[in-house]
Length: 113
Image (tube, rainbow, N blue to C red; front, top):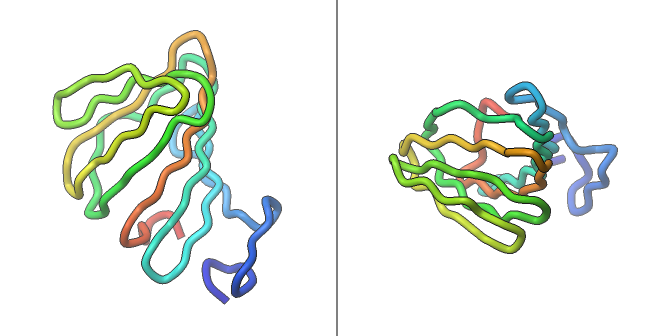
């Protein structure tokens, strides 16, 4: 089994859940070389500035969110995407609306498994 789930298919009840900040919950699945994270942000929540040794890319599925990546800030809306190289400082925050983001990490983050 990969990621603690069946070999080929995963279902929402199988996803590992991790709260990374107040109001920010990840639902995570992974394989050998990639990890997906379905992230829900409550309104007025934020992920503080951090970095990690994995590349990260994502797309906003619902709502709007403010990303700061390497001191560059962008307000992203539904359909907007972003890429964060490995070891680059970044943060994310919502305003008055909640948001949902789908993110991919490569290689998978060991601290999320």
